[in-house]
Length: 320
Ligand code: AKB
Figure 1 (tube, rainbow, N blue to C red):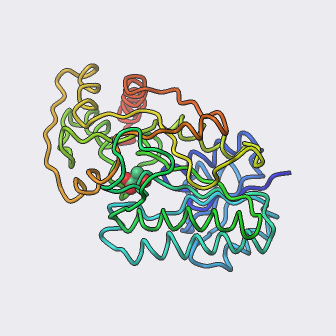
Figure 2 (cartoon, helix red, strand yellow):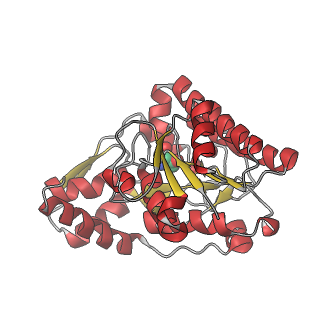
Figure 3 (cartoon, rainbow, N blue to C red):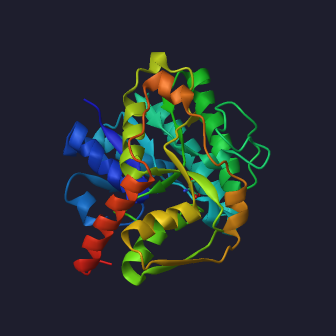
């Protein structure tokens, strides 16, 4: 029986992934690892949880031992914008945290470890359109540096110790359940909340900024499908490009306007513009499609319809 520990369970992806994994593997078999003693109710009421600080190896060991964990999903990370504000923290959580996870996984002979990466591994010298799987990785953010090192470290544990480590390069993830925090792509979530609440939004990247993006249902599908893929069929391990959609901030605003003609947007680029400019417009995810059958479902307009509906419902209930 699989027993999964999700570290960083309260975050944007971790919170929804934990619930999806509980549906798939049974509530008791998915342990939410949360850094504080106050877990979101939706996680504490639907299954087991533990306080797990990724920087404290003994805490990870203790959760692994008490629940007989055989799989770790590491969703704890400091993202690009926060990372630029505090590079040492980004290094600490993203690298020292990761090595803790990998070492515990090695020591306890885990069945699998999932270690996400990001489009932040790319940099200004990387081809911008349909960025290949194998290409120049010269990121200019500390977050990107840690993600490149994380991919290499994961691959090293595969080769050196035969540990099953897998990971995918998430694009900007858009969702309406748990807010993202500290990322450059956060404008693509904030725009929907501000549209519903105030009918206007000041965007922190310019109108022409184009980035690869993905709606949460596709992100969960990609993550779970990669986890379920047969290890023997994988030619890559910790660095799969996964694509879904690619749009500019202006195109995103137009998609919102289709539903809310009075929505207004203006652009006031800040320091995050430079980060966005260093990332690709779109990625070539042939390896993911060929090796484990990746196929996205949502495009921009489907996602916008869904996002506005869900956030409007929250607004009507006074939840936001
Ligand atoms: C960020 O913007 O930092 C993240 C990412 C693309 O990894 N959303």
